[in-house]
Amino acid sequence: MVLYYIRNSMDYKIKRSARSFNLRISINSQAQVIVSAPKIMPEFLIRKYVEGQQAWIESNLAKVKKNQVSIQNDELYIFDKKYQVILNNQADKIGVVASGEKILVNNLAPKSSGKIQKQIEEFLKKTAHRYLATRTALLAKKMGVTYKNLALRQQASRWGSCSSRGNLNFNWRLVHYKPEIIDYVIIHELAHLIELNHSKKFWEIVKKYDSQYLLHKGELRKRRYN
Image 1 (tube, helix red, strand yellow):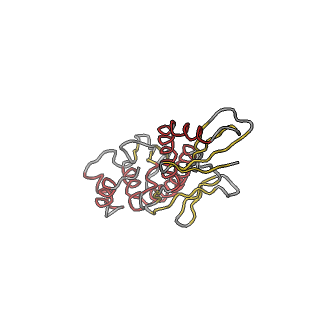
Image 2 (cartoon, rainbow, N blue to C red; image 1 turned 120 degrees about the vertical axis):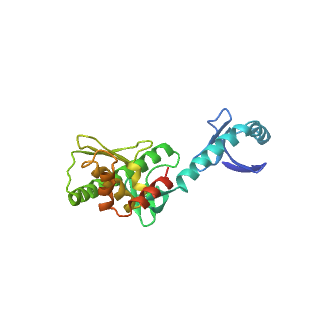
Image 3 (cartoon, rainbow, N blue to C red; image 1 turned 90 degrees about the vertical axis):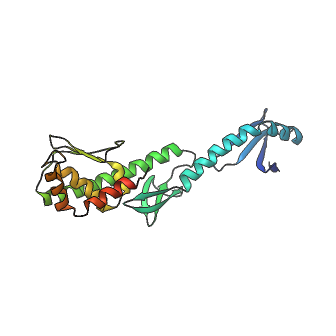
């Protein structure tokens, strides 16, 4: 038997069971307060117990609701296009896919917020790697340069780097930016294969392959995606 109560603007459900010997309060992933109670316990005692636990309920209810907002109503940008993150628990397969203007997170329970964020991050990394690998190869051919390895990083203050051995590193969070800005970063690092410095000659190379590099450089600094 389930009873519904509203007290001090707080909704809660009472679930009675012959197997319950003590009162217990829980909050599910839909932000519902559930009170498990013995079958014969008077309602006024249950109400008094809930009132005594109000601080705990409000604190934990706020945490659950915060997670719901950050996951279910979250937005993210991929190549400067805004997507709405949607939980899709009815899908046949587990994973993250882009569909129209939505990012569908398939078959992951709302309560596993950490797992959902990890899945989304892995999806973004794979998307970034596919794009950067393809685009870097094309731009390298256009610029007449060769590189050894390409890897993704999450550097705190750098979007890319080029080693003296010809290895390229890119920040995977470039996936949030529009293609023109990503091209600027790629061209910047490929130009270091010719000039491993920031001399006048270096910037002339960058300008040759990105005539709007100053604009793109400024946009990259001004616009930040977390």
